[in-house]
Image 1 (spheres, protein in one colour):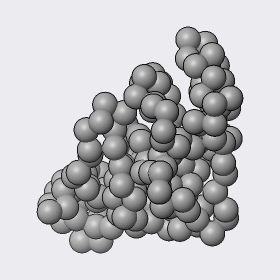
Image 2: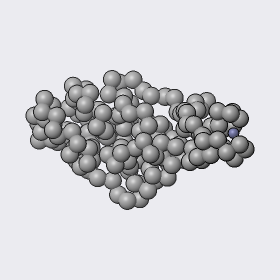
Image 3: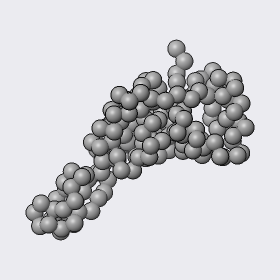
Image 4: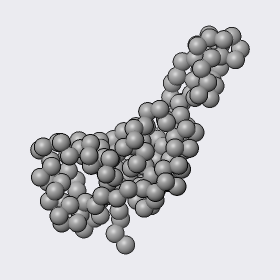
Length: 163
Ligand SMILES: [Zn+2]
């Protein structure tokens, strides 16, 4: 079976030389609409689509919901665009490898068991989670919390590394 790859916008901005025949690449309509203005690679994109190497597909609503709830859990939801959510959902739906250089996308993908490769071919292994914390008390709260429950200070946000 041919390994399928889902490309996000950062993969297209990085250029397309890593695309090779014999593999199947997919992206979503919203990502394609975002990147089609990149003139230097648009001819290449059209050729890849004509050859059937690059295919446009859109995820179903069930997988979009899975991504939304996973992103809320990792605390990345506010950093994700509609395009980011669409490629995550498509990768989940197709059980495909996701190519992305976006850290929030990679983080949510990892939490959902989606394999991520960066466009340079290096994997992004570390999973991080946003936490909100109080700089006065040093106590961490869940990412949606706005105020410290102990002293009422406004919380700051930072990434917490997951082992
Ligand atoms: Zn506090």
